[in-house]
Length: 84
Image (cartoon, rainbow, N blue to C red; front, side, top):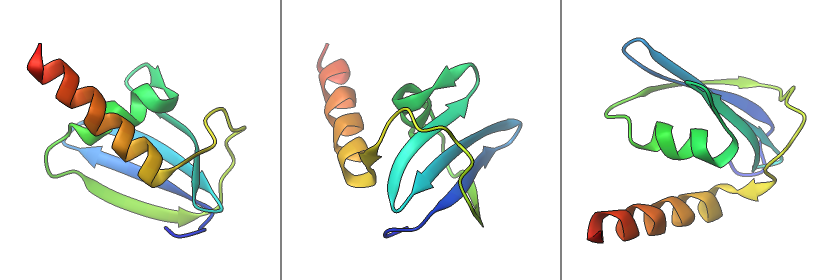
């Protein structure tokens, strides 16, 4: 996904979400009533999801964050909540 502009559909059983990337940066995400980083964080908890990647990104852009940045933020968030 390095510098790629695409839409990633994340699916697990009946659950489905989307992550939109523009030039390798997350610009938006949506699933189950969640948007932006909250949606990405939720999808990261899904076990063995399937991914479909298509070219193009039609999202307006409310995040503008690197993939690694969002992943690190998620794991820090998880760590804090697991420690109580």
